[in-house]
Amino acid sequence: MCNLRTSLLALVRVAVAWAVSVGFFASPVSAGQNIISKTVEPAVIPCKRSSGAVVTVRTDLPASSVVIDLEAGGTVPFLAINSTTFSAALTPAQLLFDYFPDDVNRNLVGLIKVTGAAQEETDVKNLFVNVDDSSVTDVQVVTSASDMRCAPHVVNLLVPAGDPSELWESLVGQEASILTRFYEEFGDDYDFANVVYLHPDSFLNRDHFAVKNDVSGIGQPLIDQTAQYGSAGALRGITRFPLDTVFDLAEPGAQHELGHQWINFLVGPPLLAGGSPHWPPSQLARGLMGATIPATGAGGTFPFDIVPTGTGFELVASPSTGLYTQLDLYLMGFVESRAVPPFLVLDPPGQPLAVGPVTASQLTVNDVIAVHGARNPSAASAPKHFRMATIVVTRTGFLTNRQLAFFDHFAARGEAVAPVTFASGFQKGTANPFAVATQGIGSLDTSLTCPIPEFEPPPFEEVAICRFCPPDPCTNCPGLIRAIDQLIYPEVRVADVLAGLHAKLLSAGAAYQRGQLKVAANVLKAFLNQIRAQQGEALSEQAATAITALTFGAARALQIPIERGIER
Ligand SMILES: [Zn+2]
Image 1 (cartoon, rainbow, N blue to C red):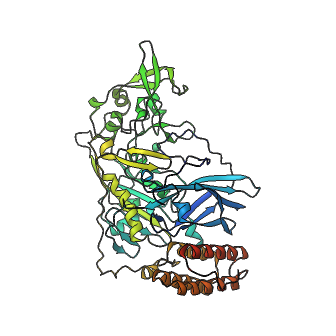
Image 2: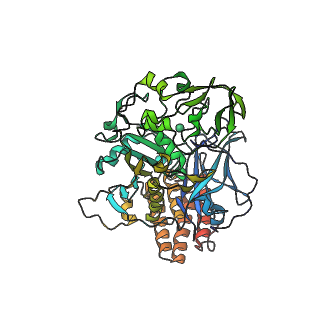
Image 3: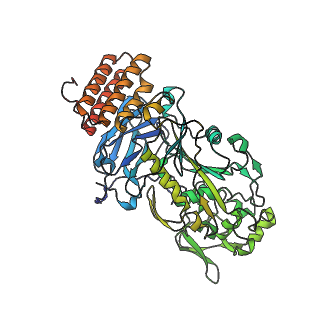
């Protein structure tokens, strides 16, 4: 299943707004019901011996239906837990269809489509999943605090929901409290932080913002907001990854976002300021920072070179270099101004981007210095080696050790000093990690110094850890049962009913882990009987019906024999 490439089906594919991609796409989505968050349980699909997964999406407004058009063929409807929460159990064959090594641990499952109240399609999103295969090696994991489990390159921070309904709310935007909690346990030893959101995640692009800027001459004001983030002054900036399936510190998008620590904030000369926060159509846009797409401000590739013809200039097709340009490296503090060659910029900038004649102006780094002054510190003393911390935020319990190893793998790749194969959304190819993209001048250390708590932490046991994380999800359960547990929390509003249902899922999961399928079946039957008894009471008719169907789907996937002896 992990190495079967078959012909691609002619499905409609919609590009997500990757920071570095040909971003000139139109979204068919109109205003209306949009997916605001998503979970896949388990968060990483084992390439071998997968039992499948439960995918849950949450919409901002009540929707009438959600379906997924599968790459494997066919359409699977999601079950409506309530008017804004929809879940589907997918099989290993559906999740891992057409997975191949060049997919680099991410697989396209299909296209999720949301239908609004008026039966019109209101949102479509590509579903990619994380895939665990033999390229991911096990890592040592330590419990650093009751809410933190730390691996060599990534820490999993558990931020429980205060109320069950918050389980489905992404924490994007709450970096100040996330980083403040991080620094209560970790040293102030990191120049940059990456925050990866998972359980739930959201279909938002990555971005980067500066926390501190002590560099003049690049158009950024001097700021120091480190205290707001709990850092004693070392933290320079934060890159956010609202969608965990594009987290990879080796791939071009990660280098692009890091580049935004310094680029492009130039307020002059006017031709360069007009391209901010990337570059205008120019030779500068051929590098990792790309060109700003007018109207959206998003970064897109500029797959052209500007070539003198003797009498003027013309655009010729030429792929992105995948490197920072010399002016980029100057602004980053990696090369002196004398290393920056003159560069051509389309003038005026709004010319059609097509192969053929154009008008252009030549600028030099001295045009930048004339407006902003020389970069200070200069390349002679500016730092070129950076430490980076990666925090994976979850709300519904910790990742397993193997899932942590998966994210550790993609954080560790940021240190690579040679090109690597990558896949990011529909982009695939060879990526230049930071050391390569900076032509060997810069380097990243993505390792964490895991705090060892003063008390002797108990050996890791998921049920025990669970006590620290209201609403106490079924972390000891296999992913599919755990997904059902997460669904009942926001739906069942009577505490003792919730406790009873949760206890049954917990013991069904534990029995399954012990290989006692008949015991698991009996407990799941009791769970379903209680759901039926509470239908229209402690939980809605709709939720009871959907959760019952999901439980049957999960049991089938796990080969737990509950079909007999249950009235359906
Ligand atoms: Zn950008």
